[in-house]
Figure (cartoon, rainbow, N blue to C red):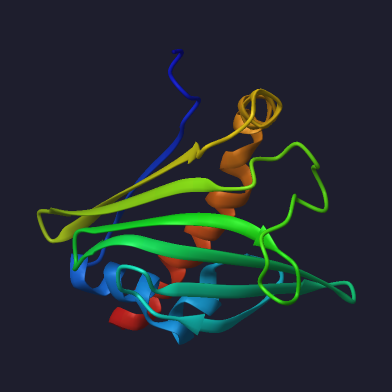
Length: 164
């Protein structure tokens, strides 16, 4: 079997690991950086194995819904979840914008102490995906840094604000 395409984002934040962890696990903080340039509403955030993160991003009179089910939580080191697009009732659906986008993405975020700073590493991999979904994901990988990168810029500014 061929190895699945995996998007990798690494970033060092000038903030302690516990604080970076909190920006991923506190719904008020998560809503401030996730989904830059849109209104992000966290409907539910249960950061524990089997717990759900239900997220709505609103812009231009439209909403995009996402759910993530946590499969592993090791505070403050590691978050693992299965992320999907959903309808307004949180049922997993194909992406409204890209029909061949993977229905489920395995998302792994690690937080490593880096001498008073934090090295965060995020990986995104298609999960139980069809050949068409894998191909769509692979073709989109070059552009993924734009969205995630914008979110990381907002997160970096939030961390500066929280430490002021």
